[in-house]
Amino acid sequence: MKTNREWILRRRPEGPCVVDDFEYRESEFVNPALEPGHILVHNSVFLCAPTLRNWMDAPSNSLYPSIDLGAPVLATTAGRVLESTDDRFPVGTRVTMIGHWQKYDVVNSAVWPVRSVPEGQDLIEAMGPMGMNALTAYFGVTAVGRPLAGETMLVSGAAGSTGSVAAQIGKIMGCRVVGIAGGPDKCDWLINELGLDAAIDYRAGNLVEQIHETCPNGVDVFFDNVGGEILQAAVENINKFGRIVLCGQIAGYNESRPVQGPTNMMRFIYGSVRMQGFLLGDYEDELPRAREDMATWINEGRLKHREDVRTGFENIPTVYGEIFTGTNEGTLLIVTDEDAYATN
Image 1 (spheres, rainbow, N blue to C red):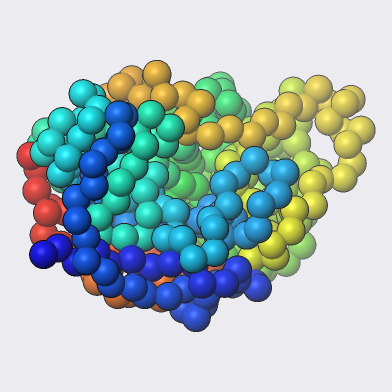
Image 2: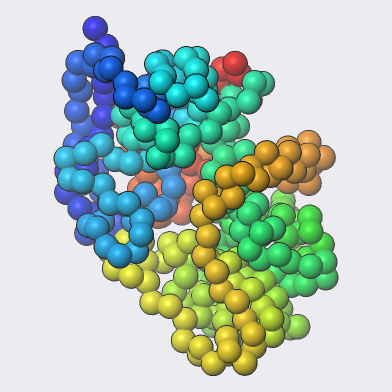
């Protein structure tokens, strides 16, 4: 007899989510008769991504999904296919996908993103340096921001999983890159380990003035993971024909309400400034090229990545909360069994 383990959404969080917002359940699991285009996956790795907090809110017109109360928490996971009615993902295939906080997961692979993991790569690599956050950074910079060599690129949340990759890709593309982070240790890491040209501690004073001092020629590309006051400060320093890449709005995820957008909109008009949001799924057909570029940069030592790997299915809600306290270092992953380290 198989036992399924799952964390369900017991109530909608008010502010930062806490363990009591979830409920742990175990139940007997019998392999279901799969409908066409479905796969059954044994999950081994769970990604702690800030956007999951949005999905815990009630339905809205913001276009992101909303988890039903009493349902398993929707999440990015990685595991191995146990049964399949989708020829793209035969039994034994290792995949990353939008799944749930549960051990056994039935996914409609025709609707939700599912991606095969290449031979020779374990699930930690597939969810970390070659995973959703890293690939999101790749397309945010190369396809949306489109920086030119010699331009100034500013990145908020630059010490985070996505921001750190975006900042390094900016350097690879020949930009002068400035990162915004919280605290001197993170700022030192951005400069000394990642090779950024400068770093701003947003807690250390007037942010508009700090950006002006570190970007005296203005900002050409702003890669934003945070929103709110940080986005506004970047707008005050954006150059004519500047590009603002909207990757996340973590400043407002715990508020359960829409994040306020920037003011000073006439600067956008008279500055011919473009602000664009995007999702990784917008570039699904271009993933092979992205993976090839990322692998090359990693092998050449031009792109560094760090993973913060925790263990234990029972710890998922507690570990997930660390995303919003800044205590994690790198892409925060939870591993629940040894299959996470298999490479085939």
